[in-house]
Length: 287
Image (cartoon, rainbow, N blue to C red):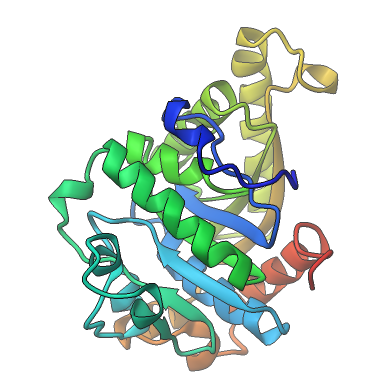
């Protein structure tokens, strides 16, 4: 995974291909097939949990059209990623310190020019990543939902994918579609899964097993089962469940991080456990 950064190569690569695997730091994309499943909530609180473990963390709001990380964190940025891309400000001027101690680079909402992947948008992102990745232990990309070309491109910049889903059938259907695209178009061999709003203990493991079986049957067969043992097209790794917890809604309504608002509640403890698993697996070399 630790291959050198090659800024010239991506220009000719397809939009869905794996374009950038930085040699320093780790880039984790937090995404979802369906909106409204808690992706940005997890991005912000996971960043706080990783910061508590001594890591230098940046959350980059990569949902350029419908950005809401600023709302979750109760921040009112004067300068955003749009200003960096247009040359109106330097990168350092747009990076803010968020509650929880981590850094954030926020995007403006309703940026129609960033709703599709143009060569300019692609090049802006690549230049940005080359600047920020060496400066942090972890860069979390809070992406848009779905499988648009912009979302797939931002996912291609990450060395790890953390997919958020809920037990609802629509969320699981969209999660399957996202994983299928990541396996077939980007050649992803594994995706890490977090199940939010879990009702019962063990829900996430059962859901992961069900999704894995469907992927093995349909996506694995389509790809010839050549990637891994057992014919699996892509391996799902269950990273944990976040239980239904009224404290989550209270923190969101107050525009506060759950880990600061109610640090001892079940959902906050679950986020902390997910952070620990990331450190023990993906981030162990730099923790």
